[in-house]
Image (cartoon, rainbow, N blue to C red; front, side):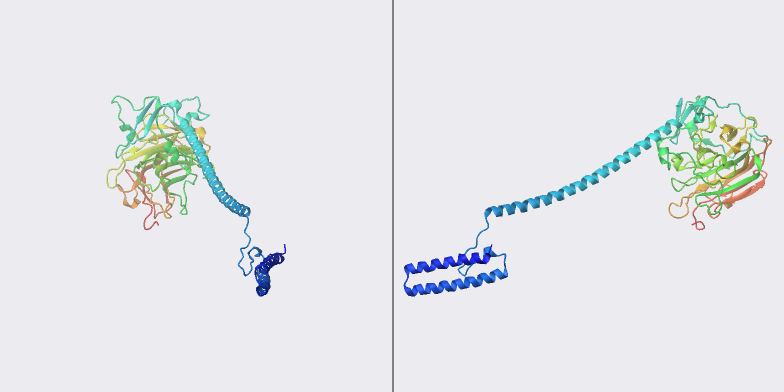
Length: 500
C-alpha cells in the first residue's frame, strides 16, 4: 500500500468539500478565502505527511492533518486475537515451567524411592543372611540358663554341637575318654584365687546341674552380635595378620614371650585375669597362649586359648574365656570358640565365650587361670584344659596340616588392636593397663611357663625370648624363681606421653 498517496487523497477530499460548501453559502471574497485556506491546508498536510512518512514509516494509521482528525481504529477482532495470543503464550509458559518442576520432583522422588527400595532390599537380604547364620550356629537346646550378665547359655546335646557339621565329623560322637595327660602335670598346683564363670551364679535349684550330663553349655549368639561385626562373612574370625610383628607394626601390637627352634607338643602357663579398657568397638585386648606351626605365610597353623575383652564380638567389656584355631593364617579357616565347625567340646561345666569372674584388682587380690594345650599321643588330637583339671575338649587332628605332627613355636603374652581411630595411638590397655615394672599386684603376668616335649612330658620353657612391638606403649620383662619358675610381667596403658 502507498501510505503517502492514501493519506494525501483522504486530506484532499476534505478540503474540496470545504470549498464546495463555501461556494454554496458565502460571497466571492469568502470563496477566495476558502480557496486560499484550502490550498494552505493542503500544503501543510502534504508537508506534515511527507515528514511523518520519512521519520516513521510504520505510523500510517496515526498520520493526521493540522485539523486534528482521529486516526483509524484497530479492528476489535484483531485486539481480541492479540489478547488471546498473549494469554495462551503466558499459560503455555507457566504450564511448561510447572511441568518441568513437576518432572524434576517426580525424577527426584523416583530416585529417592528407588534408593530406599534398594536399601530396603539390601537390608532384607542382610537380615536373611544373619538369620541363616544364627540358625547354623545356635543349635536347639534342651535347657537354657539366664546368666547374671545377660548371656543366654544353651545346654545342647554334645553330638549336635557345631563341630559335627564338619563333613569328617558328621554322624560321629565326641571322644569322652580322657587322653593321657603329660607327665609332670600337677593337678594340685597352687591357685592364688579360685575363678568362676558368671553363668555359674545363675538361679537354679540346689540339686540341679547347670547343664546335664551328655550336653555342653554354649553361649547363644544373637542378631546384635552378628550385626556388630565388620561383615557377616568375617563374623567370629580374626583379621589376617602375622602372629608377631616388628616395631613398624601399627594395627596389632604384642608384648610376648616365645620359645622356638624345637619340636613341641604343647604348652602350659598360668596368667592373671584383668578387665582392661578397650577404646572402641573395633579394638580388643587379650592375653593368651599360641601353639604354632608353619612358615608364618599362608600355611600358618595355630591353636589358641586365653581371655579377651572384645566389645565387637561380645557386646561388653568383660573378660571372657576364648579359643581359636586356623590352618591358613586366618584367611578362610578357623573361628573363635564354637562359632564354626572345628573345636569339639566335651565338658558340661565350662562355657567357651562366657565371662570370667572375679578379676584382679590393682593393688588388690589377684585371680589367675591356668591353660594347658597338648597333643594326645594316641589319637593325635590337640586337647585343651582350663583351670584346675577342667578338660574342655579338643581340636581334631584332621583340621591341620603342619600341626598334624608337632608345633614349631609356643608363645605366651598380650595383644591389642590399635585402629588409630582418632589419629593417634589408641588408649586401649593391655593386661592390667600398667607397665611391667610395677610388678606383682599391679602388672599382669604369665607364670610357670612350660612346654610339652616329644615324650609327652611338661618341662620348663627355657631360652624364652621376650619381645614388645612398641615398648613405650606396652612392655615386657621376665624372670625366674623357685615358686613361679619362668615368668614375665607385661602390658601397658597404650597412649601416653611416650606413646603419642
